[in-house]
Length: 259
Image (cartoon, rainbow, N blue to C red; front, side, top):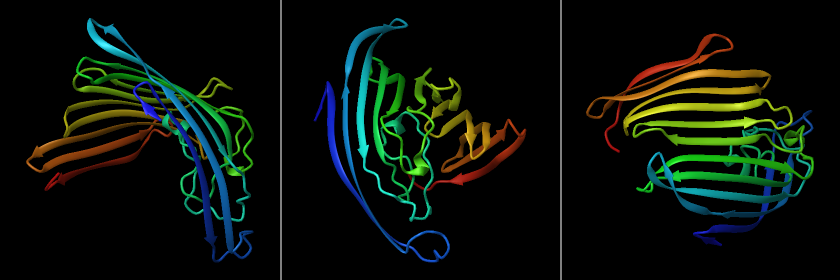
């Protein structure tokens, strides 16, 4: 059900897979594994808006609360190998995703409620000037799939900011803060100058407190600039501030013959 004032979604899914695995001697894996899971999801959102004034300009301000309940049944998956699966990072959009892994080797069991809210400032030309989102997952039960196990009864508090500072300057930021320790777990901040669709300069910083035993603390510069018709220069460089070394750097000349 979708309307100008909100939306409601009720969804039921059956997730069924069959694995046939080779060269599994001594691994504890099974040659043939069938897995069938049930999943149910209820999602609702409301859209409120009011006319306001922003630095002397008439704008529309919105308030968009969202709530989701997700349930996924459990099945032992330890006899399935980990081939193309890893944990996904939960930004604000990821809070409502319903799956914690890439690939299909693991499907997490879920019994959780997600709460989120978004607010936007939209100018008189219907262009979004600022968007701020805040959300968190509350786990009603512990995960029985070991790879999805957690240390807390709630996810990190996820926040997202998109801000068009001027006609050519943009700021985007994702932040995740643990409400158990009050520490910053992950963040990314990007400042972008967009002179036109093909003239872009971006400075960004990314931080992860712990990823496979390592702390990620990196700053980067990315640029794309036209040189002539169909030709442009593209470059990128990242430096690790923890190790004080360049971890990625390249530059190239690119030719585009069409779109």
